[in-house]
Each structure stands twice: as structure tokens, then as C-alpha cells.
Amino acid sequence: MGKKIWLLISFVLTVLLVWWICKPSNDTTVVYHLPEGFKGCFNIYFNQPKEKELEIIDDILLLAVPENGSLLTSSPYKLVTDLGWHKEKAFYIDKDGKPVSEINMMDSNIGHTFNGNRLSERIMGTFDPNQEQCY
Image (cartoon, rainbow, N blue to C red):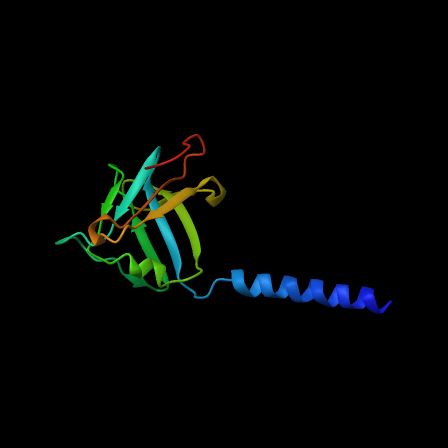
């Protein structure tokens, strides 16, 4: 009987630990906006001189990907990494910038690259379930 109780306590503590580690550590949501009908890969390039900085407004970091699939920003990649665990959402938007439909985050394949060269820090990815990898 005592062994079963310790097993149950261990299981509950493990579940609580995993939940605590995986819960979002801040209230900021990263929101991707892609043009309606966008297919394929997108890239977000950080530390690009003379480009617009990203801002967190009302706990939302908006990453508006243009039709060519490449978003350039002078913001450092650290802006995203400093968020820690965070929520993410994605939407297709119309020509006026209004969300048309939410994109299923389960279809996402998003990666991050940094190799010590600040100008090559980027996020690349796709929300197209038919697209295997983005480089």
C-alpha cells in the first residue's frame, strides 16, 4: 500500500513539474500575419540596419509577413528569445490587413537560426502542411 502511495505522489509531482516548466512564462502572444493564400516558406531577418523595429503592443508581438515572404527588422533576435515560453497565433489577412481566417498552429514548421553572426539571425518557417522544410 505504501509503495502505491509513493508512486502516486511521484506521478503527481512529475505532472506538476512538467506543467510548470511548459506553461507560458509571460503574457505576450507572438502573432503571425500572412497574406491571404500565402503558401511556402517565410523568413524574418533580424538586425537589419535601417529597417523598422518590432514592437510589443498590448502584449502582442506582430510579425506581419509581406507577400514576398521576407520580413526585415532592425530589432534584435533577442526580442523573441527574451519572451521565454509564450503563446503563438497565426492569421491570413486580406489586402486591408484584417484577419480573414486563423491558421492552425499544428500545421506550422518554424525554426530559428543564429550562428554568432548578428545579421544572419532569423526565424524561418511555413504554415503550409504540404511544405516539408524551410531553409
